[in-house]
Length: 83
Image (tube, rainbow, N blue to C red; front, side, top):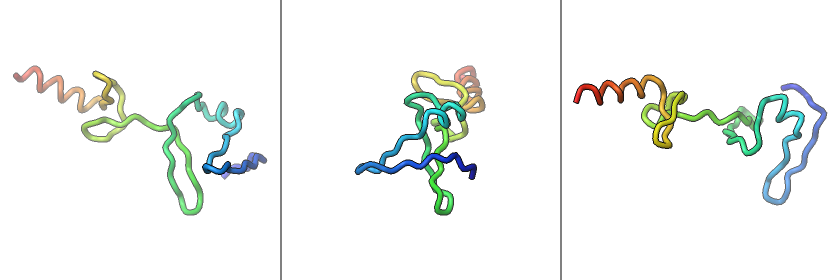
């Protein structure tokens, strides 16, 4: 872990603010969805990666408001052609 010198307290709901400079350095945007995980005793925050609704692989495309990976999208296209 890289020390930043920042210390934050949680409020009564368990919330805390990630300093703007850290968010900017990591490329986090306002209202960015975050995945929250645990690694030993550390809390890990990561950018949420859209997942394919069919196979859960990282999504590359969106269709009708649904995230799809390239492989599943190709499979759906082929399925449509075979009809």
